[in-house]
Length: 441
Image (cartoon, rainbow, N blue to C red):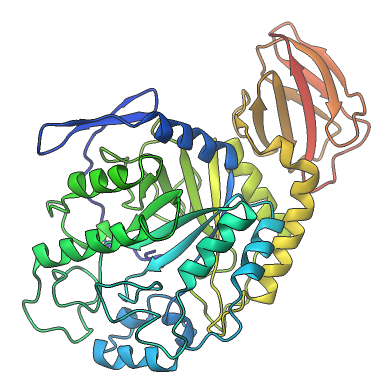
């Protein structure tokens, strides 16, 4: 994650989208066609609508966010010493997964290796990992994967394309003050290292829902990341595993989902998401407070109402919400985050049917709210309305209108222009006042 700092966009490489499936020619002239399992996984991903992002690594010990190493130009040999004191004694995978499942989230995306270069899993290809370099000595990804499979939550892996510590990673825009030798870089070595780790992640931890790449923006636009071969490796190891890349551009050939950072599709308030919207499944990632990794001063958590509104608005824009939590260095999820997970879960227990399995509805997003649709059921999510009536420019014929939560009939009138005028018994004052319309098929 780029911590609200924009280091340039990669050049846009146009992909051919047919029915939402990326098709591209690789160096070996073999055309990649997503498997049936992959296309099914894309639909399941879209149906899920809500996931939790977990940014956890050595940086949690400094409690200043995940970019502290490069922001403060910490020498990699000094930073490395953090590992000898990393002992998250209160980490409990079962508690984490249970709290996340209680929120209504359907998947977890965990930082397997962030830009600091520390691997949060047992890897043969670097001693700088949580098993070999720390007194904790446990593979937290193994424990998390086993618990996700046990509790029925999909597991995705964040994986950094860049590294602020390794000498073989070519110098990029970030990590310039971390003490590596001038002129460092051996791309062939680093590329092999990444692919070896990706093979471990997709071999040793069961079925993985997605690989979520980050760091593309660290190199010049003409840098060859050799993603064709890397993406082909992932799809070969697990055909149903989806690939997303947080490169702040339209999807590149071989990617299965499109990512938006800190903005919903079509918005660009953070300066990172101005790209065109593709036909691929969409996901927007957002923080619960202000940071991705744990920062001790950052208690500026969004209210539960704000978070529910963000989830609903994201669904109304036909996307998933990946909501971030930065676990503490002792292995616990922050209490404020757990509280919000429960409160979101209470809301989803009632209204989840209007979110899960839906697509963006017939009514475009407005200041008052959004719509989602499932079959011939159109859900009108009223988030901000100071009136007891609402006109909808809907062309389909409505056969029934009711308040979703209790089935109370809603008065409606089909206008001459084809739109519909709804009349409520009261001015909506709920977090989300949902009206269910049945459309004539």
